[in-house]
Amino acid sequence: MNIVVTGSIAYDYLMSFPGKFTEHFLAEHMQRVSLSFLVDTMDKRRGGCAPNIAYTLALLGERPLLLATAGEDFGEYRAWLDAAGVDTSPVQQVAGKFTASFFCSTDQDNNQIASFYTGAMADAGGLSFRTVKDCGFAIISPNDPGAMVQYAGECRTLAIPFIFDPGQQCARMSGGELKEGVTGAAIVICNDYEYELLKQKTGLSEREILAQSGALVVTRGEHGSSVITRDGRADVAAVTPVRIVDPTGVGDAFRGGLLKGIALGLSYEVSAQLGSVAAAYALEHLGGQSHSYTFREFMARFDAHFAPLNVSAR
Image 1 (cartoon, rainbow, N blue to C red):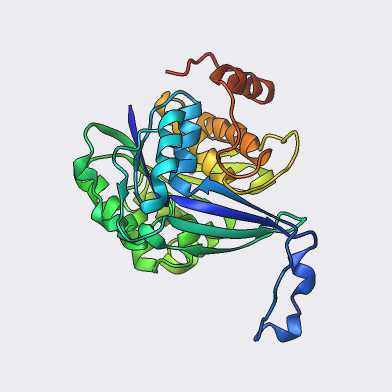
Image 2: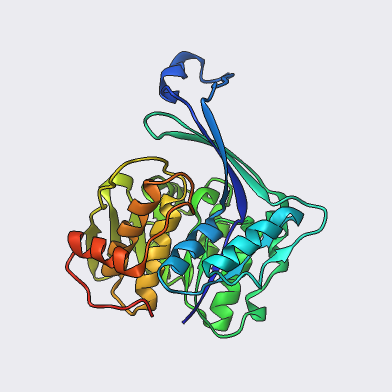
């Protein structure tokens, strides 16, 4: 199965704040906030939702196609992804622009404050699923909002099953745009906060979302995830990490594991269990692509937490 991953390509600038952000917000002065947090460390990492998802898929034996835009500074990143097993041939480098950048500070409670510079991501609407041959499944992860709506429409027209993953763009997209993404999706996925925002902005209830899509997956951090269909609900436990280093890219890793399960023909519940294992690996490392494992190591960890599976990488 050819899996096409769309979404942002970005460089992540990850900073750590030794205190708690919440201790510095004054309820009586929320109408005017002026804060600066002195951070102890900063690391520049390869990131972006699409490469993070694709990287997990590559670790699990797939060769996903990355359909996204990047800037003139993408050359080294492209070579690294190609070496990791991601097909970057659909990626378009935009002249005169930098690759998008994610600036994120994390406090000691793993709360995050972030800013995102769009850069070449703004040109994502220039790409099309019509140029991709034999697409068996797709994920539309956070990207330029107009491009996300366009991709959803193309997937419906071309009969390509897709996951709609609005993520942090729930805050930017209108209710109408979010409805366009939900309509016809095989799966709608978001975290619990984004899910409430999605319902508020679209005016859709859970039942109405499921009337427009095949399934709903809601991730809940350390509380795992829920897979909701018209037939019922299954709650999937999170996998306890060996250590907690950085939450950046954890949700993307979950999505990569989920997609691997779908590629293997597994149920959405079991696919979400694969997602839980993938998420734990990411949480134990800095950034979304600094961890690694073999498929055998991954499945051994899976078998230690869930009902054992007899599957191979391909």
